[in-house]
View 1 (tube, rainbow, N blue to C red):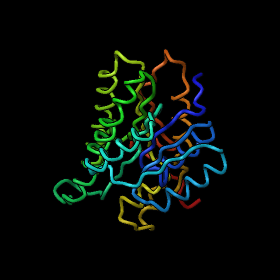
View 2: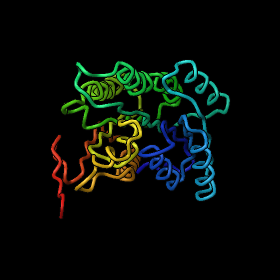
View 3: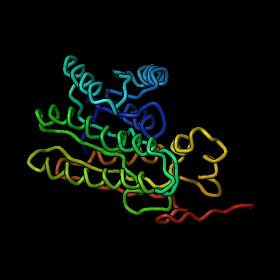
Length: 258
């Protein structure tokens, strides 16, 4: 197993959900953290908690991964601090709305494409060269089972996660002559702020997504990421698909009214 202690990990979208769970999980493994998100207060609070609890270094950066210039500024700041991530977790992503193509909101489409595809590309483009310079590390892209099978009214969100799947395969090919490994972890229904964001803060609608069964929890995905990152140097796990037990493909078995 690879020892992660005192190495640096970069996690995007770390202010909640899977990103926050990854920060907690890898901090417990002794890693130093670079955590990014748009919500500065949440990042600061998380950083203080993890520094105190695990006696690690934590760097926080508040910016929007959809903004190419801000991503470049961030990468330059890391270079100035002489920080080269051993692990990059491209976690930041979202779904916006759920409707048929002919009824979709173009603003929602652009938000998903800019975050889930372009944001991942911007971060990866600026961080990979430093990782390649030391010829070691792990890239983990948080995808979705929505990138494996299309579900009704998922259309553009599905398309962005199919793109993540394709990019994960492409990055693996591009890094074949290096020691850097690449994995996509693709969760099914996972109880985070995902549905709350998708439905514009409507808590009633969002809660119904997870009604009648136990969905995945963010910690489940963080533990999978830790497992992937600690495999021996010759082992490259390229994809993990994780469903809750009550979900098979797009179908969820709900026990309602019991």
